[in-house]
Amino acid sequence: MAETLTGIHHVTAIASDPQRNVDFYVGVLGLRLVKQTVNFDDPGTYHFYYGDELGRPGTILTFFPWPGARRGRQGAGQIGATAFSVPAGSLGFWTAHLSAAGVAVSGPDVRFDEDVIAFADPDGLRLEIVGDEAAGMIPGWDGGPLPAEHAIRGVHSVSLWEADAALTGAILRHTLGFAPVAEAGNRTRYHTAGSGVGTRVDVLHVPDAGPAAGGAGTVHHVAWRAADDAQQRAWRERVAAHGLRVTDVLDRQYFRSIYFREPGGVLFEIATDPPGFTLDETPDALGTSLKLPPWYEPQRATIERVLPPIRVPAGKGAHG
Image (cartoon, rainbow, N blue to C red; front, side):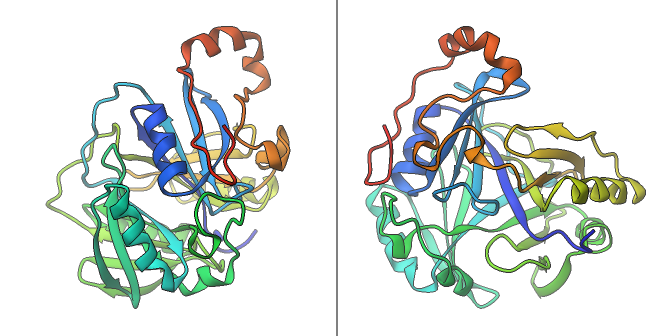
């Protein structure tokens, strides 16, 4: 088993209106909707997966959109912000693009020698875009709705809000093998052994923030990458040996998952890289139709009646 996880696999958040969510993440942020499926624990609700053109691990942001969901509350024990990587010279494009779309943007600010802008999605989910030197080495989606040279390359990092940052830091270092690499004010940055996007996590010490409450506009969990089933089983044993309660392996169709909470309360997942989103759709057809796992196929007619219809925004690489 690798001594450290290699990076972020995906981040999952909660939204309210499904169409508004698709309009923002495809139409404004230029991500590809790579899978329309359902919440496997609540099949009357969509589960949307956004990412690069193939939904590669490290590029994926997913949503459970519950129509009419109440707004959550930001606080300790929660992921406070999700950051995307773009090439270092692209922040001017993104500031102008988001402003033209009516999105309020703050920054740029400098964080650990990188320029960062901050904004929120329509549900209030806190997002950031980081000018990342490593992102410039990764090709942008040439078939996407935004210019490939400025396109989002993947998840840069997540920021964990913690009432006791030391407890969380100990789990990151001693259980998951992350290394602390920088500190400024109440923020400590940890790095995985991987390279490229999705290899950083920041821990913010916020003892006066108050407890978080889940709901629309909040992150549900962050998933870390395991190369395969064997590595995931080894990580499960290691996490359990460090005194954390970890679930059995769950089949999520496009990857397999285990879940546990770190001491501060943030829900962590370890997900396998394979089999990926081309399991049941060709690369050209990703995200164009509702896909259900085999155990829900007998209920397809009922599920399709319950789910509101959606339209994927048009673009040179988008499918309607």
